[in-house]
Length: 206
Image (cartoon, rainbow, N blue to C red; front, side, top):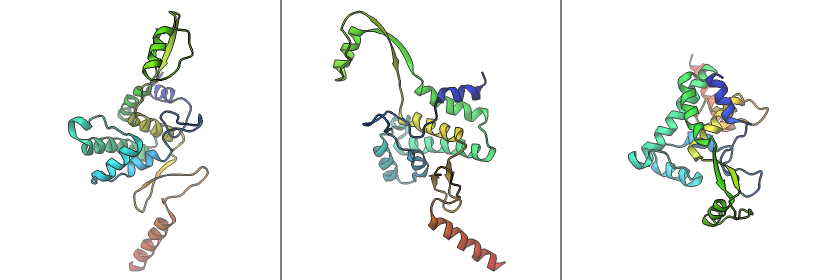
């Protein structure tokens, strides 16, 4: 199995908007636009970083060693670099695959063998009912360990597998998600108009 095969296998069925399910079984805690919002955050404004982190409960891995601002900036630049490499080359190189896989590894489920009695104790600890008899009957438990950074990368991978639904506005540089069946180069009609007016003015000068 090649590295790319492993990369695809870890992602599984394509979905945009990762994280745990919230409320309705069909509703994900993280919306599809979360990835574009992450890439659009102005890292020179700590208030914008805090606003995004509070909105999506994001804790950059190095925030306690280098501070929230620097940790967020590092994660954003890493994802931006991989995104632009993919956009320019149409594929992910070995280095980028290693980076993406290192994050996807965090979402890989772990298998633990335990007893229904221990599961009952765990259920009481986290205030959840297991509906299992508290005896020593053994069970295999699949545990999913994830965080919002790893699921951001999962969303990015799904964008790659969907042949790049994520786009970057050629006028203002903001990221946005293309709607199904649509092709456009601008994040809004205003940006499209501004780009065309600027192009017209430049042509008149020549």
